[in-house]
Image (tube, rainbow, N blue to C red; front, side, top):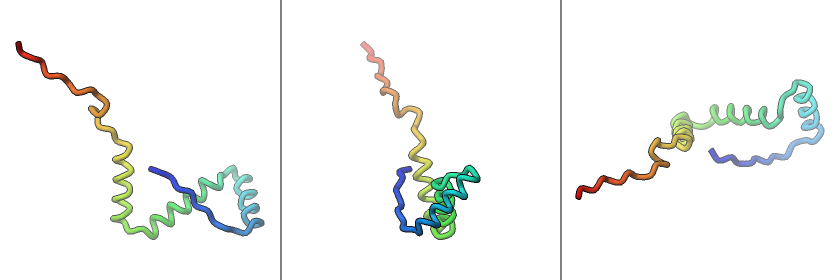
Length: 78
């Protein structure tokens, strides 16, 4: 699935405190924020829309077995 960047404005001292606290716990800010956004997504996006989006994502990872194969030539009689 294609990724997008989210930019927010936040209090610098608070952000530094969060980074320090996460570093002490050996946690990554980006991973934690992704988890928060996933929770927000699940809470706010209608289940049918989530199912549709997730099925599109699953389809993009599935490659039909014969997709990369060259077509067979039919034998010629004669």
